Image 1 (cartoon, rainbow, N blue to C red):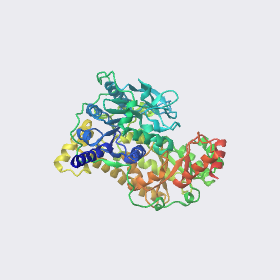
Image 2 (spheres, rainbow, N blue to C red):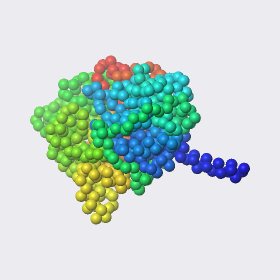
Image 3 (cartoon, rainbow, N blue to C red):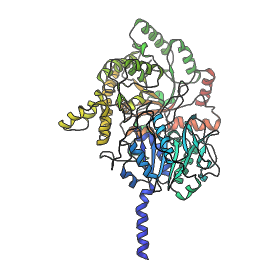
Length: 629
């Protein structure tokens, strides 16, 4: 009897690691820093979360090693990323049938844009819907976009999730067969749902809500309870079981689904990493030099577009709101060295000199890349059609409407020499011989980050990336001969992507460091600031930040990322030194007493100040002034 008990104990111990391990598959190959918020609730619920960044596909070995898989959808065909393959779908079938495996589908949703909505991830959402129908799941991702909070359902399968609404980001309405499948809903439609498939479980939610736990305690509590629930198969019985399966039809997909057979195991060179990452010992935020004006008041920045006609209203708003910095995006055409533009900058510099405002003339990196002809362009797409070069007419249409993004090769020497370098030199020199007028120059990374995230396989980039792989001459010659359409797949399947993108980032950092030295000869105290809606984590942006930052002159980051301490810690591990300001949502901020205290603590304790991007109205300026007192 004792031997039998010991045998059962050993068997239970052998099964336990698999039951506790969760694999994250992100088809956008996101930087681990970006996935910290997504991983933390699952880690808190007892999972060992592992992320295999540079092989975002399932293998047969994963079936034995993990019990739960979190699939984070890509952006195809609207923006570059990897995509689900037929091999992935085959592994997912085995994951939930015949075993109590858990599949969490985190689809990429549409996001509101300048013209109402911006399409994103249509292809993977379509494939996910076909797979759900094939399983008879009774769940479908709809087309209706919902941006309202979610509310856990009372008496649902997830009883411990509470009843309070929580922020859920941007979601699509889910269509469900049975009410028991709904775990959380908006007032009008379900947002998070689940179904049983034989002994397994399928959960459907958006990437947006799965990553929102780091921003709100209520969202985090719900996600932790959801993660704990997936570890308790006995409680799944309350969820409606799958039924009415249909054949899997992929012929009408928005783009061809790659017939990529699953590998037996991941290629060497793609080891998983643990999330959330354990902070490495190092310096604190105080390890970088802080300019006197930031140390006294913190950054209080208004980000705006520049027009000579609007300058008076901008300066009046900055004064009313008690701000100390103004960043204005200069149209690329206005950087031309003509008599008219020189007169505009002379007048502007004189106006700025009469104030105590720090001015950051800025430029959109995407606008520079879009105007940079005839530079080599490349756009990485799905495995079925990895790269394509748009013709000139298509590129013009892309630039005007922003539906698709052409990508200038990040390491094209002509781009650096003829476009980026002259633009930043011009910005540094604005105001003539008045260095006190210009504190620094700004770079807007929006749109360009999405473009560079999936780039890196045009000829100029490919040569630099291959040089960092340490291949022998024969291997290097064979690799250089690869046509663009198979470059990504070849590096992916050989396990070379990690070293390849590291080499690209290092190549950008080297060029940026040379540019930094040149600009500081023109203006020894110039600072570099970066503005972005999303987290800068593509190889080009990271290389640019790394090359332009030093401990003595850290870059200034104006991002929407609220957890700036974690951000700066992750950046320092990459030898990027920065100071981050917290974004104030001016259109939604009321500054109620309790809210103002919390926000002020986050702005001036966690961060190095705040920035806002809003209409310059006197009433808003007075509201900001009351907040900063």
